[in-house]
Image (cartoon, rainbow, N blue to C red; front, side, top):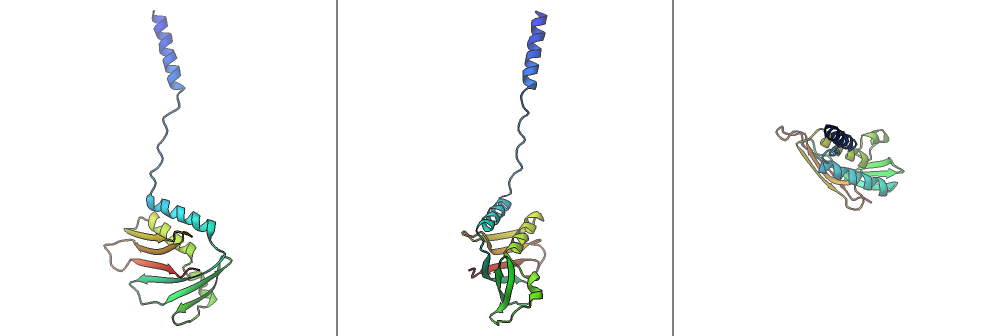
Length: 152
């Protein structure tokens, strides 16, 4: 009888050891990150090679005019202030806030866990139309807003 019990116990132990371990639950998905990923993928899928848009930064800084930015084949090719019409020189083009750089602003706010991040994305093309960030809401004058309009 003892041999049968030992064999049965061995059989149970072997069958249990053959079972795979329970799956590791996936990391919880940050809904803000998921929304960014979805819209970045949409933008990459449908973005035109040539487009123009109006960019405006809102902050506790000296007032700035809007900038009308033209992208051709993925590169800034023209930019001027509106309504003055003053053109920005090509050496300043690298400093302009392109759609891709706006996605980077959002990613930075997520990664660094800013106190405030509000984003509105274009439903058709996925680019951010309005971004409000603030790394520390207890400190004054750190919040920045970015607005993209007149995209065509």
